[in-house]
Length: 233
Picture 1 (cartoon, one colour):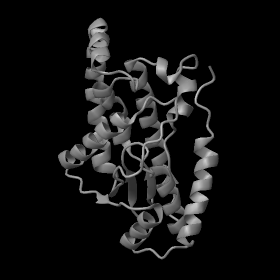
Picture 2 (cartoon, one colour):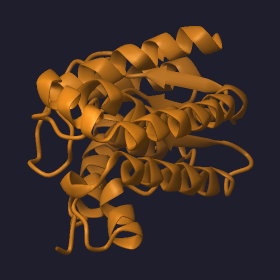
Picture 3 (cartoon, rainbow, N blue to C red):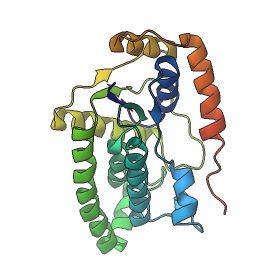
Picture 4 (cartoon, one colour):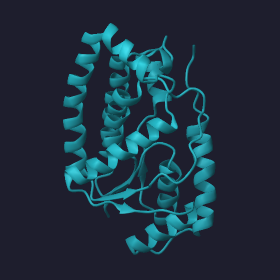
């Protein structure tokens, strides 16, 4: 059994595919806590939109910790919904796009000059975090399955992400594969096509019909992930 990563940027279908693949193959799946779960613990009086660069980095590092803890439970192999590169990308993409989707270049320029020291410190800390995230990704996974951007971005009006954010993080992710010498298996198409390709590639006879695995995965995602409240403020 391998340590499999379903990788990709935001809104590419990682969670649904990882659950469906787990149901179809019997390989356990693991998920890091999402920002909606971490935020009330670390910064209970804040919304994501109110978080500073430093606070967003703390959220990413906490998610990094939770991901490692979750994956360590499965010594025989797992299917991971994302990987440690996602935690680093969440912060590094902010340097380009800003914290909020509506922070255009002139707003970023003003903010960086008004808060020069905190912005400089953020970049220095992020560089160290980048090293940890890349080192772990390089040594702790056996197969990277990359989901390219094929589905429309769906804004949810509370997470500070956008199509611009997604495009830039996708570019960074692909560049990071090349830098680390990772050759991902690129899986595209509809959800059923993606699942069929993966099951075939892994040479596993499904223990559950693939359409049923997808239906159950979508239900699990809706109940266990989509319904998690973001903020208590």
